[in-house]
Length: 323
Ligand SMILES: NC(=O)c1ccc[n+]([C@@H]2O[C@H](COP(=O)([O-])OP(=O)(O)OC[C@H]3O[C@@H](n4cnc5c(N)ncnc54)[C@H](OP(=O)(O)O)[C@@H]3O)[C@@H](O)[C@H]2O)c1
Image (cartoon, rainbow, N blue to C red; front, side, top):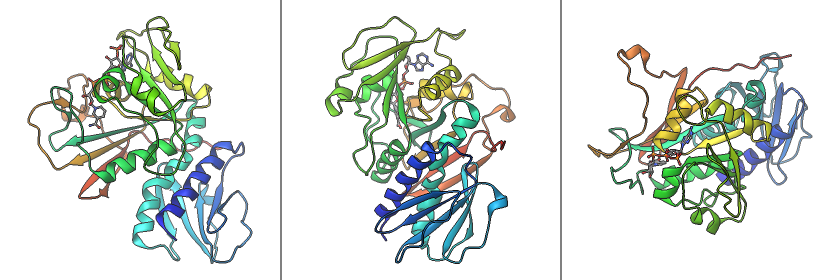
């Protein structure tokens, strides 16, 4: 079975988890000719298929001779039983399977889950001083970003990133549907790249009045004391709209506001083997006086990503509250 088969299975799993209205204790993903997801039920055994069981409620860890069994600890996947998974498939599942359950975390928090992503230099720069950032990450990082776009309900960027990078924000390098594209913007911006590559409407959120741009929907928010949109409020608004996960693709100003307001949950940093020595820093947070005031992570992992690594850290642990 190829990585693409695993990928199709993960998309199916994410879809089923989002649609499920029941509490999820465990689920099965059967990969093969006709992939299948079963939530809180055993699948009908099928010949030549590969079986994955994900347990969310530890009381439901059972013996199953044919299943590769995992326990999901919030955003971390723990291997309980590996029957027939090779090392590359296992690391693929560890990297992406936890994101199939983002909807459950969103329901628990009553707001969309935030996953931020940057490709940065060794000295923590995401662009040169003039705004150039193409390409700091490698091809594997690009594929990763497209996978994440497909697993998340939406993708969000700030106005400067739109103006500098002219992105499409669609899924092109892997199988998957396009996420809802969201831009935080209160001033003029050039939306042509977004419109050119995809006909779906763009959601603009800002603090000014509706700029009435065709093919877009504008939602105005009250500016907070920092004269910006309150990121927690935005994530609650998106959740109420059925958007359970947001892939936050920068830039520094946008991502930092989410971090400062604890409105993002996972930070992904692709570390590129280059030094700028100048340029736009990944984060713009208020000055701290002591190291213990720095942003810390409950869990983190460095995943191999082509010729380099990606840091993935969980900002705050949210365990499931079971009713
Ligand atoms: N290497 C990478 O992975 C990567 C990824 C993304 C971007 N980048 C680079 O990052 C650079 C841009 O970063 P940046 O920090 O200058 O700008 P940015 O974060 O892209 O955009 C900042 C603007 O977005 C709006 N905004 C963001 N958060 C807001 C909030 N909470 N409330 C209200 N408005 C909000 C504001 O627009 P208004 O002024 O209109 O209100 C603000 O001025 C570009 O050079 C881009 O290439 C690199």
